[in-house]
Length: 179
Image (cartoon, rainbow, N blue to C red):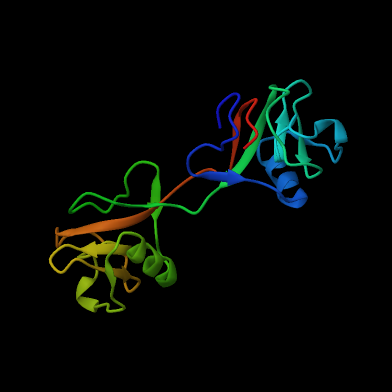
């Protein structure tokens, strides 16, 4: 989130559990402190995990509802559920900031996420390099398939790779943000 805001950056959500906050502190290379204080209430420090900018230690406010009155903290947030994106027609690449989807269940979820039908069909005719590896939208029938039978490629030239957003596992909110 931004300074003075209670929001996490787009694509992220608050961390509320101590263990997840400890992991997040390690993930951004900061010290974890188990300390908390009633002086944070009712709305001095962000709810949940935050980086206290004066000492650069990470704390978890689990004692009150949180806020941004102190104004010198950054909320520490975790990756939220990823959105999906389609690659270019005839490309085996995902758009910048996205990564391939290789598992059937994740591909089914992605198909639903973009409002397309999922098909469990696969074919050896996709090998060695006719269709993209992993989850893809077959443009002629607009169904989503998961190529888990071969290495993949784009020789057929009419498919679009279906990808999920690749985010780092942790992000800091802005100074003064409670969320």
